[in-house]
Length: 86
Image 1 (tube, rainbow, N blue to C red):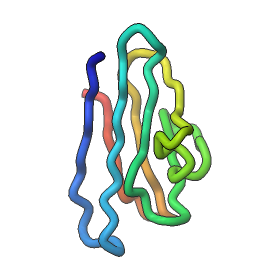
Image 2 (cartoon, rainbow, N blue to C red):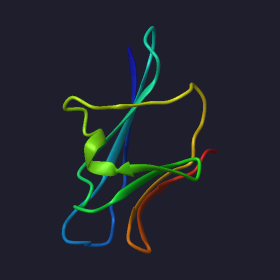
Image 3 (cartoon, rainbow, N blue to C red):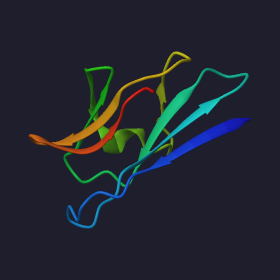
């Protein structure tokens, strides 16, 4: 199984540094968010997926289609994590 882990150092927002992981292989790709600040919201390709904390992989993950995606974690009006497709 191939895993892609993305770490982003975010300028000291309450010491939180969100991390996302996309897993691909035989099962559908999934997105896991860890370290998101309380109240943060996950956006994938501009769509609000709800609380980022719920997709912590324990046990809930977000199933995504294979391919590239624009991923953001927002806390209010602030973007605390952003990963754009290359």
